[in-house]
Each structure stands twice: as structure tokens, then as C-alpha cells.
Length: 334
Image (cartoon, rainbow, N blue to C red; front, side, top):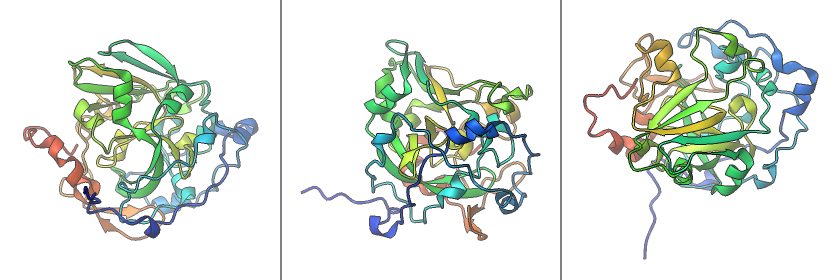
């Protein structure tokens, strides 16, 4: 008889309290014209008191918009992916966001409501058997949806725990049908400066681009997000499709994806182009390797005033460390 052992960081379902479900928030904000609020000045990432900023306003307005895939949620939870930390309150996850397309501060949740997430299409190109563009709803309905509770560690030294809904990135790779020579997946977000006012900042290399190796993309932890807290994911959290790589710093988890390009050349990412001396290709979490300007040894869970030790690979070393055993010459942690 096969006996399945949970990972050492797993927690029984009964010990994880799910966040209550509540209605989506999109159309009313757009109708009220709140999506284009001005951007506040950015605070320093390591030393800012982000709780002061959290208290700087209410959450997104109620939303009556119906997502075409809303009938799919909530999806079954996969208990193999449940970290031993409490789930972060939904109102914090949906109101404290990095999304540079809408501004460099953390209070972009209302501005992000301007993003029209339907119609939306996703393109697969590069080294694939056949290049194609697929409607997002067709793609989501073709995928094996499940819920996973993941840690999220920001390079700015704050963290959260989120019940994401979505599907393994390996399933998307299979769907795209890359050719045998593909070694990397280059990912690209939307570009619409008329809506995303942050994209009017010409000193940034829009659109936002990220990349991973094929081995990372097909690791069981790599996850494409379509929902959160039992319903479709909201704009400020990367609707309608974002990436979750829980062992890497959060800036690798690109939002609002429109393109997957399979290639044999390592892609240069948004932050590599902005500040290559501080941000590299790998971005694996390591408490012993500081950022150029601050320590990564500790982190502050969102919604608390405590600091806790950061774990190697954000606590997922057992699952991913083997990806990097032959890369001693690489700067794996930035």
C-alpha cells in the first residue's frame, strides 16, 4: 500500500482557517471613475513603515461585476501545499499591493480597477509547435484548477500567506507544447498606458517582463493564479492570470499575463533592466544574502507588528533546492 507523506511544512486542513468569501469588487469602482486616482510618492522599501500606509484609506469599493469563470470557484484545496502559518486577512492582501503599472506606492488597489480584464487573451509563441493566441476563459476552463495556500515573501522584507486558486505551470507548459530546444519561458504583462498610468513613466522598460527556466516552470510548486480566497483573483492582485513562485522573491511573480514565449536564450527581466546591480535572474529567497541596501534575515508578516526569521527558499528548500545544485557559479539569490 502506498502511504503518502506530507511535506515537513504541511499543516492539517482543520488547523487552517479559510477566509470568508465575499463579492468581487470591480465594476462599480470603474463606473465611479476611481480607477485613475493619482499615485502617491513611493516609500523606501526596506525602512518604510508600511502599516502607516495600510491605514491610509479603506479597501476597494464593492463590485457587482460577474467574472465569466466565477462559477468555477471555490475550487478544491490541495492540502499538500499548506504552510504552517496563518492565512493573511483578505482585506490586507487586496489593499497592500505592488503593481508598478499603476504606481510605485502600495495603495494602487483602486487605480487597478481601471484594468479591463475582459476580453483578455494569452499568446504562446517562440519555440513552440504552433504559435497561437487563446481566450483567457478558454484557457482557464481547460486547466486543472485547485487551491494552494502559499507563502509570499517580498524583497522589501514583508510577507503574507495567501490561498491562491489556479493550476500548475507545468500544465500550461504542456498546453503550449514547446519544442525540445526551449530552455526558458519569457513572460510578459499587458501594456496600456491609457489605463495603467504607471506605464507613462518612460524611464521604466515597459511592458513588465519576467523569465524562468523550463525546469523551474515545470517544478510542482510553480503555479499560475486565476483566483484567491475562493473567487476570481482581483485586478490589483494580477487578474486575470498571474504567476506564483513561492520560493522566490515576489517581484518574480509577474501579474496580468498576456504572453508566454519559449526560448533558448535567457531573458532579461524588468528589474534586471531597471537595476541589474540589485536584481538578477534567479531571485531565490535566502536570509543570509542581503539585498544591496538592506538585510533579508527577517520579515514582517502583513497585518502584524512582529518580525520572524526568513527561511531559505522561503521554507520550500526541500522542494526546489535540487534545481540549483549544478549552478555554483550563478548568483542564485539576486
